[in-house]
Amino acid sequence: MKSVNFSTKSNEIDYNAEVSKAEEAVEKAKKYKGLTLNVTWNKGLMAQELLLYSAPLWEKLTGIKVNLIQLMIHETYPAIEAERKNNSSFYDVISITPSRLPDYTEIKALEPLDSYIDRHGFRSELDDIAPQYRDNWMTWEDKIYTIPDDGDIIFLYYRKDLFEDSENKLLFKSQYGYDLAPPKTWIEFDQMAEFFTNNFSPDLYGCAMIHDSLSFYFFEERFRENGGRFFDEETMNASINSEIGIKTLTQMVNRVKYMPPDAGRWGFMDVLQAFISGKIAMTEFWPPLGRWSEGYGTDGEQLSWVPKSEVAGKVGYAVTPGGYSALAAGFGLSISADSRNKEAAYLFIQWLSSKEVSLKRVQIPYSLRDPYRTSHYNSQEYKNLWANAGDYLELMKTAGKSSLLDLSLYQVNRYEIILTEALNHAFTEEISAKVALDNAARLWNGLTNYIGVEKQRKAYKEWAQRPNAYPR
Image (tube, rainbow, N blue to C red; front, side, top):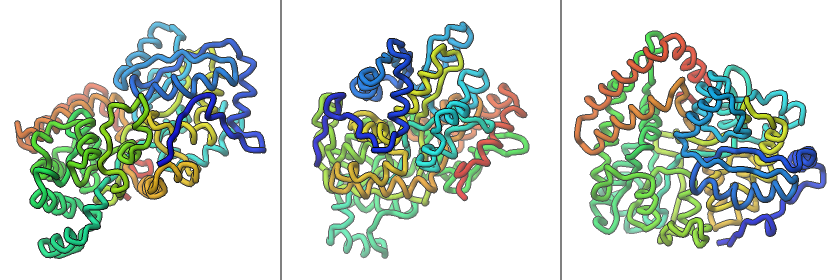
């Protein structure tokens, strides 16, 4: 495994012989030397990359300082909304979750980026951004408001050593009648989870899944894989409590019996630690698990909380059962419409998201910025980071082509909260899947009526026509 130490001294950017868009941004930004850009960023681990690498390097190259405002994801929109109301002109660059573009654009909080992109000749470099992010995340009502800065996607991780073990393969085939291999369907997944649980527990369980505040991502993915649609497009009545919705949630609840005790309440950290510690055979998770399970960068101070990997060299990657992974969450970079430093803010965004700089940033172990450009997937530098990093990149590239897009509506965060609370009551078996989803659908309908049926229908239709909003 390659050791890496990202700093402004040890990792200068290797620009191409031909002047790159990163270098152009630096040269143009030098005239703003002495300026300070106020930049929002997700609080905690994600902010370390900007604090320790990107911001110091940008200041060194241009003389422009970066003042980082750390906010939790759910705090960002309210902070920007308050700025608009107060006309404070405080923020310059905003890191947003693209599914909330309808809310940001409704209050005119973001500067359209088309003119900046064309003036600085950056449009051709946007072609290198993987289509699933470029075509789905950047625009609202035909205007570009954000440039992707992350490649969030959830896919299947499995213990290659367990799946390739000859005794396991023979025993599984004798019990289930087909070969033990990465599951293509959720029925296969459940049978494999059952197999490992029955034969190896309590030392090993078949799987574990996130069941806390992020659970809605996994339900929305599997609900659509099963043929579900979120709303009746004519009435805008919620359809999450349809037969498909109840079937989907029932399958998810039943899966808990193949998980460690109390896993029905588990969150991000619980699942991550269980997989890295070798306690589960399979999970569905975001890309950082792939890096950290190989021990990549976990010897550094920022990742000292990650347990020592017991599965390094034993991890396989596959498209989520059902054939559709999900583009869950993610981040884009935008300019505040109230910024007094819009040109400098844009040049900072162009530099951060350029081919050269973004490739360095997605390799920083603690950055939580995942590959999102074709050049990232093809990078030999990245492929050399650990033994099967090439397989990891290829899987992200392949899975991304059919990955399902996050639901995007006005006030979508409130729909997500309602759904999450319902799911979590079902996972802990406080109420049935049907009651949970009936409750959620009723609250969704009330929220839609509050926002405005026609207004929400327009937003839903714009979202639904995008590539991979629903399975093709």
